[in-house]
Amino acid sequence: MFRSSTSPSCCNAPSPHPTDRHTEPVSFLFGGSGRDPRDQELAAANRRRERKFARDIGDERALARGDEPRYRRPGLWLLAFIGVVLVVGGYRAFQGGGTVPITKSCTTPALAIGVSSVGTGSDLEWSATGPADGHYLLVLDGTPDRAGTVSGGAAASSGFVMSGCVTHSTYKVKATTGSHQVRLFRRTEGDYSLVATKPLTVT
Image (cartoon, rainbow, N blue to C red; front, side, top):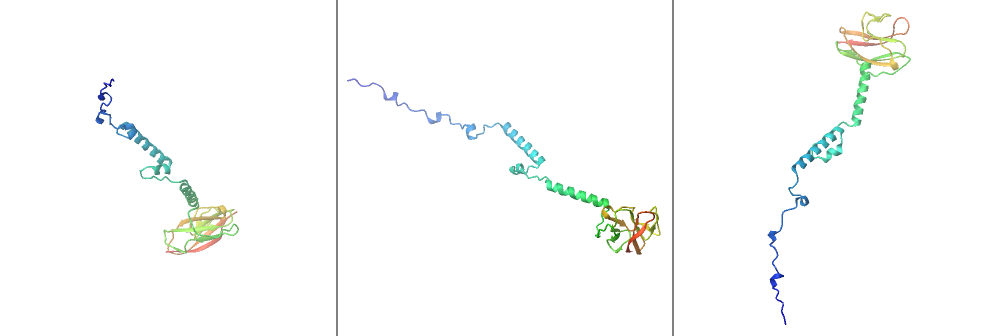
């Protein structure tokens, strides 16, 4: 009987030593250090450009995703509020800025002043109401002629009309100390006529 002459070593050869295998980490799978630094710089530059654009357009959500301080741009409601304030302020400046309350009347002229006593050189706020037609003039103590030249006192305003039957303004008082009269005149045809008056003490 024949026996196999095959040596056991031919089939049971020792496997290679584990250290002979390639054991370096695969960077693209496991996030190793194989990333190009230039790609990181490019990504950082892109993020900076995106944040700058978000600030320019007021994109709050985009800014909230970053770690930089949030920059708030004025909202539309704030801009609208500022616009209203400017319009109202411009209208009041055109009217003279007075704030003295007065009951509006388009039939009966009336005059109101902010205070009954004021220091010389101070501003006196006043309001007037009356028919929209005709020309008006505010005078301290005097009387205007047909041309509006005041004698016996001083003009406290230039000639004006009652747009909307009411007007407001401010007069810088330049008078000696004592008792005075603030007088409202109206001219429709011919001369000015006295239509309202208020006493004023200058200190």
